[in-house]
Amino acid sequence: MAVLVVFIVGTRWPLAPRYLYYFDSGNFALSLEQFNPALHQPQPPGYAFFVGLIRLIHLWVERPERVLLVAGLLAACAATLLIRMLAAELFGRTAGILAAALLASNPVFWFAGVTNQIRLFLSLIAVGIGLLAWRALTRPARPYWFSAACAGLGLAGGFRPEAALLLAPVGLWVWSATGRSPRRLAIGAACFTACSLPWIAVTVMAVGGIHPTVDMLWTYADSQFHGTSAVFGATGRAAYKMFASALVWNLLGAVVWLWAVPFARLRTWNPDLRRQATFLSIAFLPPFLFSAFIHIGDPDQGLASISILCVAGGAVLAAFLHRIGSHRAYAASSAIVLAHALLFFLPPTRLAQASSYRAVLAVDRLTTNAITAIQDLDCDGPVTIVHYASPVSSRHLAYYFPDDYVVVLPANPGEGPLSYYRHESLPVPAEVAGLIRPGSHRLLLVVPGNADPKLLVGWRNHRGIYYLELDPNVPITIGPYRLAPSPVM
Image (cartoon, rainbow, N blue to C red; front, side, top):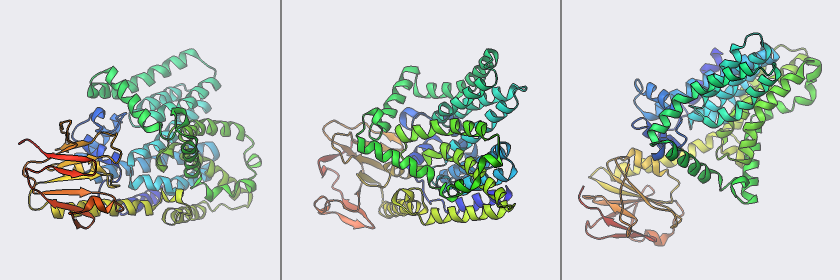
């Protein structure tokens, strides 16, 4: 475990991007100042306990990038410890060691550790609830394990509400398999409710009531799912692409052990395999099916099911080592880490590249170049920044340049433009798309590298950021949009 902790810290901290990575990361950085999921600080459903954790870390760590990184390191190390315990209780010590190595170095788990650390809690929740549920199953004379599993589900909802719901079938199956006691179920439900109410109450109060919270959650879910899920009306092609993504991202790290399945002779190695296999299946299938048919936009959104696969992988490799008469679990773990490192740095397919260091580098370079160029152009006084369909996150521009107006012009004119100043939305007149900040001497334009040259006529280029010296009284037209001078602040 000490070696794996050193590996986790040594491979996350140095590789972390200089600036916030995802749009969501900007949302979490803003939540350090104000918690309000209705304003996407952070995005719905809010993750109240995670925001509490990063605010606690923020007392000692100043930069938001480092705050999120520290939270991710804590989650990654805890998940690695718990998966070792879970796999060891299911299949023995060797399986525990191998499962920990499989998770700690898994390319998707690694990717989340340097980009979007909240998703590491999917792993932590999956293996933590799995451990409590397994103990409730194997130690029925001690009912507090089932109560602890239910309480854990309630606490987990404050970090990842969907994970708590998707892992609830494990708890129900354990209850069914241990006598179906109504009293035990009632106590478990009370524990779940008691641990859920704090984060639910905080979220509802921040949003402004139960009905606004429900409307917010439904609107956000529909906006996230309708483009990819057939259940929400997506095309068959889009739904198939999401299914293929879920399959590839779940199996990417498993290639290092799937080859051993035919040679492991699992039933000979473990005659009681049926119960363990049923347990892992119930833990794996709901998160995987959610990813495959409802939503998975990024590789690390599948970490709950990926973590359960790592437990299965530890069992397969332990059975294989047992069959060949080898006890070199640490040598096998080293081979696992090396194979996963190759997949992380040299991804074999386009989908695999989405969870690789190449993706991290590409986004980091894009964001760093844009922010550095804007800082160069912003040094002589206030400016107005216009984000027009650029892959650079508009949320990052609003976060890192709070003293400038940031105008977000969508590529689709049917969507509404937005304007920000000091992290707040600006009221913009209906006849214009955005406001030019009073006193702005320059207008900066952030566009994709393949932007229409006609759009850029008259603009100067500085490291990919285009700028225009402003006449404060003259409106500016950008594509189908018009910007107008703002009233004096």
